[in-house]
Length: 250
Length: 230
Image (tube, rainbow over all chains, first blue to last red; front, side, top):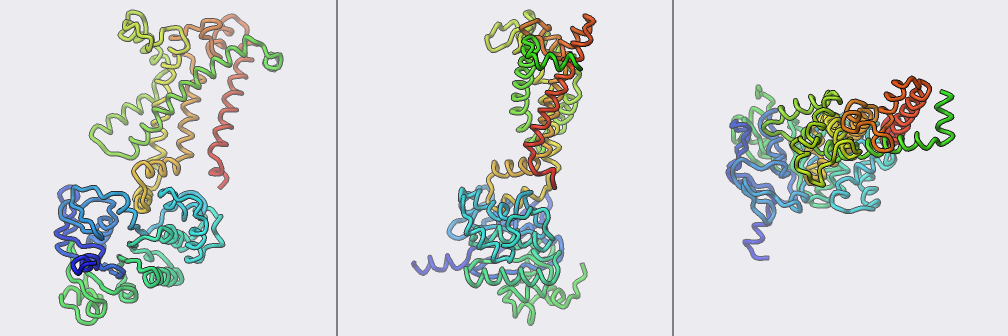
């Protein structure tokens, strides 16, 4: 691979002047953002800052209103539909898991089925083992507790072996046991499989525990991006400093 | 009641002819209604477009259409001097044929199928669509997933559609004419026998109609599978 080619592959995402508007109201404005391959990137900030919107753009669930998103080796503009194979390299675990009214294993195998991969029982079993739910494989998904449901949501995402896993407040409603478990699973996924993680959280401690780099979002913009240590120990922007100290009023 | 049992168990040919025609006409109309109604209901429930509210209002009106008014409308359209009857096309059914009855019953039942499907689809958690898409679903796969989640309601829509036409008398009477061996169905036969004073026979046919309705609903319930056991 040439040097320029290598540099190009250093990041999975590069966003340039990306904005998103709903009915004329701007909810996101990102001038320049790179997310590295194999990185754990955390987005922190108050509710309504645009974190989830950014995640939806990164999963190509909706196009930006303007700007360019480079993903791996291809660049997409606002009017360009993202081909399915690219979209399928990314998936999201949401704050509130909505499972299908089927068995746990059917839920985990659902994404594989969408890709025409039937009979992938060993992958499903392995994913359930990773989240510690192999005993519940045949149970109806509706009967699960909140923590178990979120772990099934995580299993149905990791079974797809995505290049990028987006996590939208995945532990916001969970007890400490499940929070610890989920953090451990995604950390292992990042270390062992090199999966890029983008984590949205309003819990600064979680960002500190998991992330390599952290970005603060306020009022639909990114205020500061820094390595985790610099972000928490020597923030450049006074708003970051206030946020880290827990003094930000919002 | 005894008469009903006797007629059924002696395999009375006249009765069976009526039963078969009723099932053929209402079954075909239900098939058309399902093919039109479920996709229409899914579109109304899942997409937003200009004029959607107007279409929903029309759909709701259609759900409450008096069958006899539908019968009158179809009658006027298909009669020889009517706009469609004039065309003399082999694709346009003639009045007083089972095909004309199918047209009328389809118009009666498809708004019910579409309306109930729409309600069922709208009852599915709106977040499901995004989560399924995030797992890599195409538009078609997303719609299928939502319809599958709404399956109890979708099957209720088909049951409601069938119930509305197997038991309706106004439209089939008007466009079918209750002609023996040709367009006589269970409901029109009941009217005729009652008018003739054959209350036993009318009751017997009524029991058969109820039986058919019950058996179809049992079959539909089985289709819904384990959902009701939870």
